[in-house]
Image (cartoon, rainbow, N blue to C red):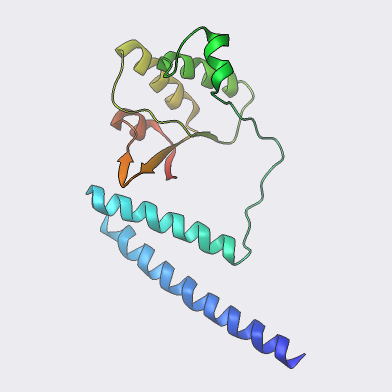
Length: 162
């Protein structure tokens, strides 16, 4: 019994130390409010680390069981009679259909690099602004960071990193 209490006390004390250190580091970078990309990437990294810390310390967010996945696979090309990457108006239409069901969050795990046709970009941008629930992702491959275009980043609710 004493051994169990000792192990628990040591682990929770260590967890508390790590938590306080991470809070200090995150708050330091948060107060900088610098628009520099390096600090922005560091803030994303610290957000990711804080989520990992919460996972390791068994602090789990409550997640509902109603999740809708919209997948783009080989069958999608044939069903839409288009080749990927699809015009952004296709994703705008998809968002429009999802918004009818009043979701709490829409996470887009897609890479939108650069600008495309103006009408397509505006259709997607309007749906993102209408929903106010869209979470975009950054994708990092081989030390290259594919960023969300600025107009989508400003309209999105938040941005994550993969």
